[in-house]
Length: 406
Image 1 (cartoon, one colour):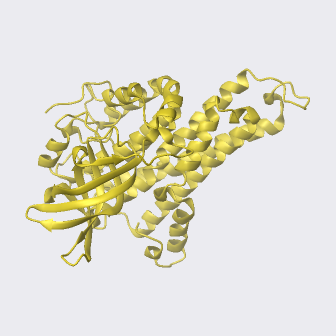
Image 2 (cartoon, one colour; image 1 turned 60 degrees about the horizontal axis):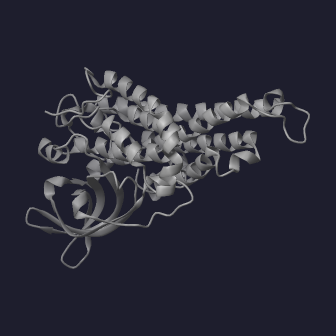
C-alpha cells in the first residue's frame, strides 16, 4: 500500500511516533505560513506555496487511516496539529482542521471506498455537514443535487463529504445521510468575501444530479455516534469517536493556534518596545497594568487549552475503550468547547490592548488574527452561546435535544 513519503509519516512505527513527527513538521512551517498569510488573504485562498507545503508534509493527512497512507492521528492530534499550523496562518490552520476532520471520517468507510478516495494518498477531502443537498434513491445509490456554502478548502479538495436529505417520490424527507462526492462532480461558486478567514477559500459547492453509490454514504446515527460503530480494522479504535461531535470540538484547534500566534507577535513587539505614548513608562514591561494584562492573556490561553484537550482526551479514551459517550459527557464537551473558544478570543483582545493602536495597522498581522478569530468564533459548530446552553440544559435536567443534536 502506498504512503506519503514525508517527515510526518516516514519511519513512524505507530500513531504516537507519527504524532511527534507531524507536530514538529507543523512547527517548522510556521515561518513560511506567516510569510504567505497576507498573500493568501488577498487571493482568498491558500497560496500554492502553502498548499504544496502542507500537502507534501502530510499535514492534510494527519488523521487519515494509516492503511490509506496517513498519520492515523486521534482527536487530540488533530487539534494540536491544526493549532500549530494556525499559529503561522489562521486560514491554513482552518483548512487543515477541515481536511483532517474529514479524513478522520474516512475510517467510517470500508477499504474499497478508501482505496478510491486515496488512490493518491495526498488527496484531500473536505466537508460541509449541513444537509443542503436533496437526494433521490436510484438503483445502486442516489442522485444528488444541491449547494453547500462555506466549503473551506474547496480549492485543495479532491473529494467532499456533504450532508444530504433523502426524499421520496413526493419530495418528502425520509432521512439524512452524508455523501462522498468527487470534486470533479461539483462546481465552485465564488461567494467567499469576508472580513476574516479570507484565505480559507470557503466558497460554495454546487452539485447537479450527481450519482453517489450507496457505499459512499453514511447514515446520520453513525455520523453522530448515537449507535456503536465497529471499526473495520482492530488497530482503528480511535475512529469510534463520532464525527459530528468531533468536528464541534476540533473547530477550536485552529482558534487556539490564532491566540498563540497573537501571543508570539505581542511578545516579539514588546522586546523592542518604545515608551508608552502620553505616559511615564519607558516601555510596556515597566507597567504593572501591562504585565497583568499579559498574565491574564496567558492564563486565558492556558485555560482554553486545558478545556479543549480535556475534552479531546475524554473522546479518545472512550473510543479506545469501546464506550459510547453518554449525553451528559457530550454536553460537557460542548461546554468545554465554548469555554475554550471564549478564552482564546478574550486572550486576543487583551493582547490587542497591550499592543495598542499600531496593532490595527493593516501592515500588522495582529489585526488579521483579530478579524480571523472573530469570524472563526461565529461558526455554527462553534456557537459559544448555544454550546453553553446545551450544557446548561443537561445539568439542569432538561431535554438537551431541545437545543439541537449533540
